[in-house]
Image 1: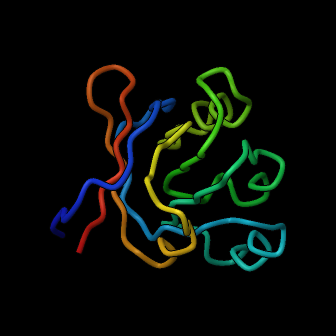
Image 2: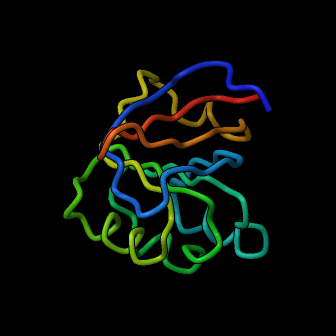
Image 3: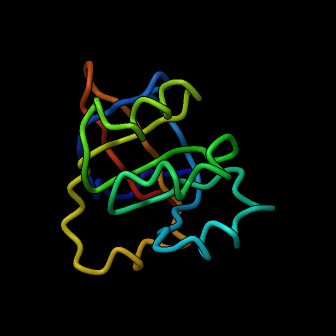
Length: 121
């Protein structure tokens, strides 16, 4: 797998420093229901701290990206407990977040708390 482009950066809030998987933009409970049987290996992208929304699939996902929140957000705390790589307040520079659906991504941590998202081939 080749890293092709850095597409986002934010606050790394996880115990694990790296994850690779298919990015899925979660906008509704229906999106979560559709992942019940195949959440494994997915990097879930949410706009708000979606702990309640992601709860049913949280143990199976490879990583979490959230466009808001901090290290003290419930989603960040739960991600650390599950040892799921998580970037809070990620800045993606995209107007259409759904354009990331189905793309392969890699979450890494640089330094103590700088989380970076790369696209991969």
